Length: 195
View (cartoon, one colour):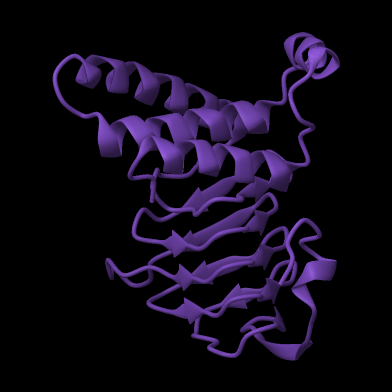
């Protein structure tokens, strides 16, 4: 969670690395002006809203937060995302735009890489939602729900349905219901991280 300006800057840097966005330069600035990356625009807006909501939520900043919420909702609808703030740690990489629905009680650690058609939510009217560790890869169409925990360095395959906890690290989950398929090296899937 972003609790200071230093956190905010760090989250932006880590998100940029995760998305593979080159460092700022003249060519990058011109390219982003002519053809802006909508996912990067979404993530920048999300991080800014998190920063102002968590750290600067008094006085006139409340008006600015309302404007940020409006902008965030507008870009979320455009991309098909239903992602509340303060869910993802630094290093988030949303690979494609398309339907992504996340419960506000969910918590995901750093370096999450996620595809379209992912749903992470509560189950059966419960307010408790999944808690995912660091370095988690979520393939297209994965459904993760319930009061469960997923360990660090886990990959969840396409269309997997995860409804129970997996405490073992460095594994691949697949199937409906999901089960451990094999042990993996997550650095081969989320290539920007080093363990």
